[in-house]
Length: 461
Image (cartoon, rainbow, N blue to C red; front, side, top):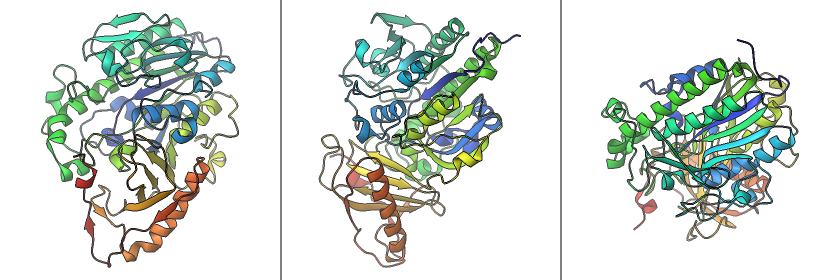
């Protein structure tokens, strides 16, 4: 079939964005349940970002980092319930300036009144997107089989089917109507996030039962709890339906003759530790909160292999703009992933930087081997974005302890490692626009006194 896209010099761009999805839901990361065959195939044929991380493990700040290419404290959205400042340029602005049609479908979570806002997002708070079919907090305007979003005029639109399918159908309709391109579409799902009013993971009919009582990731198996074993079947069922939706969208692109000229990025906002690290599902520096799946396909990414560099949300904007042939602002802290031109990826940073809010005022640095976590004692992460004083809380050897069950912070035999990571963390904080803080050492412990992580202090009274 002839390619119908008349702008072959400019590829279409689609972000397929999930919510609260762990990296190890993918078979490429050891999941044995075949939940994501379409993602796995896309990653193997295109470019797999093996080490992909959020810069803030909570919905609003993660989305703001992607949209602006800036860390949450720099773009102003350092916690939920803060609207994206209108003076911040987003992916939509950059793509529109580059001659693209822009569209947003699904969950936004970057407008005012995010806690109980069930109405439409005002036009001035839509981040510059031209086509709009979205809800600010989709979990508040919909149920698993009753999806309601709002159009450009702010009118409610009720869509049939399971919510993943309803949102996917809307995206396919948009793609079919704009196939002559070039278009940039941000497709944002709620799944596999829990349904807030139920505190449950409502998978499609029959899907939860497929995965209950089967494989559980190692950290969750070790830490356990009712949320893990009561919800993992539904969570995996939601992931399976999302992957089926990805397959349907790729099939639609192929049938329209524009698959080969469309860049597709699959990723998520943050992970999910199922209340094993604090009193809810994320907002911690642990791997289950911050590591996410990611892959790219299309022009510039086919045959790119597995990227081993440490990539994070702030790298998404420069990556997509570069792939589309558009300029990247010099002030952006991230780097463009260019798998077919390895020279451009030389001197890649050896670590990723994570800011944590709401549950605490915390900071995390992750290298290939080490995880170093600090927090500001006595500060409320819902009231202040940062601090000039932190205390070491956790140190993990990811190579020896991939499930982060043994805290090495304070052990004298690891003091040199901690000091090096402290310097790296402070440097990354300054690069993100923060003031260089003082970080107090953890209380010393003798070698051999390996301390199991105390989780009780992270649970609310």
